[in-house]
Image (tube, rainbow, N blue to C red):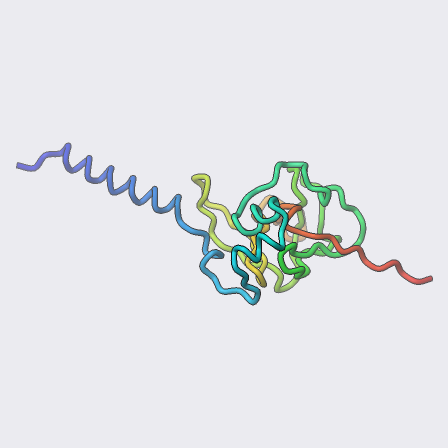
Length: 166
C-alpha cells in the first residue's frame, strides 16, 4: 500500500537537495576562461589579502571602508587584478550604500553572471579580462541607465585624469 508520509519525505528530501545544490553552485565566472589567468599563488603574491579575498574569492568589503568611496576627481577606475579600465568617473554617484556606485561601466569592461549565494539570486559583475569579482549590479540606479553597479572599492584602483595644460 502507498504511504503518503514516505512520498512527502521523498519529495521534501529532493527539494532540499535541489535547494542545497542551487545555493552552493559555483559562480559561472569561476569556470570561465579569461585573457589573464594566474595560479592562486601568483594572485596571492600580487594582491593584498583584502584584494585577494574580494577579487578571487568573491568577498565583500565592509561598507564605507574604501577610500574610493569618496573619490571625486576625474579619471578612470580600473581593475586591481589586471588594470583594465572599468568605469569612468563621470558615471560614479553617491548611492548611500557604502560602496562606490556607478550607473554604467566602460564598453567591453565587465562580465555578468548569476550569483546564488546568500540564498538569493543576484547579478554578479566581474572583470572581463581577469575574471576578478567586482561586486553586483541592481536595477535601482539613476538615469540614464537605471542601473546601480555596486562595486567593491578594494577591487579597483583609481587613475586620475592628467592635468590639462593651459
